[in-house]
Length: 376
Image (cartoon, rainbow, N blue to C red; front, side):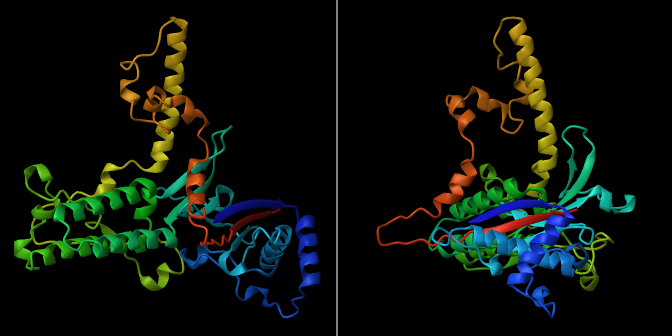
């Protein structure tokens, strides 16, 4: 189970905690830096800089938290944990949460040229002043990519004598699930784009083998991507994309230069453009902004209806029916009163994985901590 915690320390508190840790675990040769976990999915200049003070503080906080937890209940392991320290030497705050790799860079630590405007970079605002205070860079984490890859492998393994339509339906379900959850983080994760191309190719190859042929002339794009109503398989595509491809040596060092080159994912000999699923999904950031507007409009319409002593009708909300988070239409569902109290359903879903199914089965739960530290 993954959990995340943040701490804020004054310089004096940080110094005191480090002192207590070093008293118990002396480090005369500065070896604490060796084996300190880092987020290698980011370029080098965006990772945590392993400065002596920050490394000692990270290890000290981990040691302090580990000692607070009762050993009979749970434990945390250094190998599976990551402690990100935000300080004068480290401008980035790194963590992963719910399948997303996040990198928060405050506005005060950037120059005007470094401010980025693209999909997969959220502008974080102060809720009161509405001032932009930081930017959050998003990627999909490695574990989530593995889950998707394993799901596609499972589809291929279990598709013995299955019909082509069923194979494509399973692919579509897996792809829609991935894209509607991660959205703009997908196009920011080069490894996932490569994986999507590979998996889409494998699904198509499985169908071709079912017909005992891989000759391209027998399988034009129209066979796979045409809707079922007019004779195709109705396959959704994320493989026909341009994948960012910078100089590999420098791309791992810095992201300051931006993306300058692309390579194509899936290609074909026909002259048709295959639509990409991402084009039809609104990014999360736009969804959040739209949601604020829609719910503010709903509040005004409801206030107006109450003043006129009437009920809101479907016509009043027609333009915002399928908008907002949660959707406006949830207010008109039969179980709307239950939904108002149904908090934390995603966390409950996570915990179900650790429920014991049988008397002989034991489940070891290891809590992986993600500790975010602030030092002044």
